[in-house]
Image (tube, rainbow over all chains, first blue to last red; front, side, top):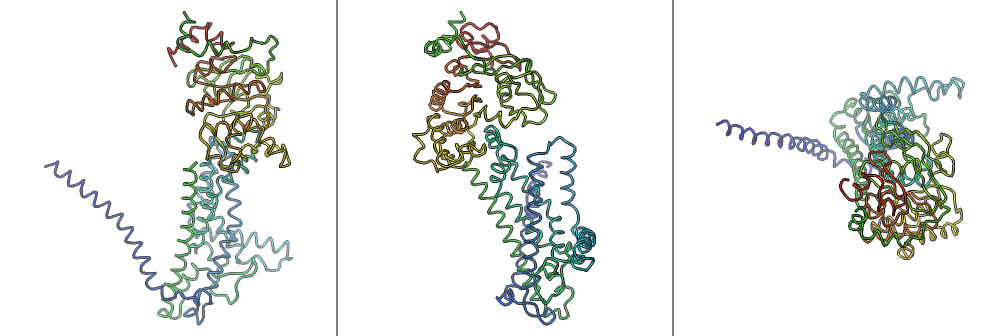
Length: 302
Length: 278
């Protein structure tokens, strides 16, 4: 009797767990299916290349695509070197037993756990109101140029947000470089910096790229951190200077779904915009996965 | 009794030993360790090692796993510096200068004291670039012609030139394990070190490749002072002039290979070379 019961429990547990796994698939399928179904038709050349018109009930989303692209590019310029340097320190220089390593490492983890809206407030307080104001005071005699929300501050805010992503994935890539390569180089009379620049970093390059791409795909989908630091509701011009404001895909979705004067007219646009954003992030993730897979393959053939 | 045991266990020993020229009278000491001890954090790995390494001779370090033979070898080019928590006491003199002194330029030291590792570890670069790597990082042979000449010379010395001269631009990883190890030897030789350290250079190789490496080591003796760590006593007996026997971080015995293998002074040496432990 008890044996039969136990068997039954065994069998049901299998189904229960399988159901949970199936649930994930189902949720994703519904989400993507729904968006693709409703948004597909609206994705036209015009939609991708035109600006929104008639109070966002018609036209396209080009300014938002442009703004997002510019935003993540500027962000990458800041986050990639900073993140790589920090990862090189953790992987190549730090003594893993030291208190500084542990504290700094934990700080990276904590940074990754900070809610993204907090980054937005930090960006407003630190970059816009403090750094920006200082720039204006020293370079422009107090005239308002940088002490206001701007694409540069949004990019820097996102750089802080994505820093842990870059550090973790780059450090992983550096750690995957065989110790024997480092030893071979040292034994030939390399300095530490030669080992880092000629052996470790070139070998970890695919991992560094993966880290940068993951950061970009994470940043492209964030809205909360840029709410206060430069994302605009609507702009008649594309941003051309670092202290211009900008439109952004995620923020544009938020606007379309909450601020539209005509909900029925906006809905198809909303679906299409979400589809573009999803496509963009999936594409970036896929690129990261492909690079990582090729890196593994290359290593296996060694 | 001991001799008989040695003969049976090491049939090659007698022939190899006979082929050697009689020990030269004026042998020059190149490296000498004096009361050298080393700790990995709290664990002592080497305890009071004192021995001499002669110029243009092959010194083999033997002993069971974990006896400290690799640790000692890696002290000679300060590779142990890379491990956090290592500290040492005593002296290791290279041409009379203590290479453990804090003001020693470790980078310059490692150029003089080359190293070949247990696992062949060529860089994932071309054959040529592997050998040229040491030249490049040290700023040697600045022009391309000179560099090519030195790469060829190093590959010649490592007895690899004929096998690879037509595919220098191919990846080093296309070579077999034995070829890779000879490439690593060529890479070490290209910067023209004075001393060559070899950490079980043939243990990852098949018998034919091993024989080639041993022949090569023998050839290189005329130009380089060689220290080789091996867990293979036949190998030590075949190639070396001097043998050092370490056990649990202590130096049990060292001396001329022929003598040490035939009439070991210490009972533990005899037990080890006759295969009673280790």
